[in-house]
Image (cartoon, rainbow, N blue to C red):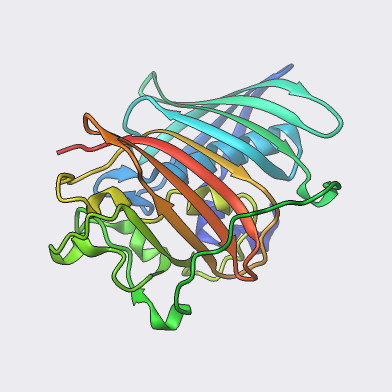
Length: 274
């Protein structure tokens, strides 16, 4: 990655250094940043971006088509080791598995398929439409959270659709849906890799429900499908939860770029943590 890209925080904080390579297995050293956290826990989208970037570099392919990350333990800011196994590398796609190890324990396991989104050809048929929300300057500024300790908010310029984060003021709407705009504060252009971060950067809509009192909504599994390279600039996103059962919930997301093109779709399984 060039000097210009490394001047942005997300790129610096997802950089890993290769320390060993043997056939299809690669080992890297990484430093988990404390700058993308909710409370003391690094954000799941940031961690998924870290592992996917390492996979993309190992495969030497530019774009994450699909990434699924299973969060086995809570990651901690500080050193970590990334172990990669290349499963298959073909002409159009490559797939690899990455494991994040901290203190001799596996913290996250991710699998990604990479390719080149600019080479796609074939028919289009999209019935989804971007959420109808005011422009960023007319939205509510700030990244809300169940805790005031949000270092992630210092790195994301977030503008929430008016009235969609009702739990922030204690007046819950019981509509587990929210939408808004986001971009990185340091001016980093939005690209395919950063969509993995944006897919988990917004506050959880489940907290709008009266029954969902929680200080933390940790992700157990996150899957992101990147559909096309985004235009640089703002992303417009909507997230919904339709089923909270026994304290566990699904969250579905749609991410659009500044032009209104659908660029990513996500689903995660999470749980309420009191």
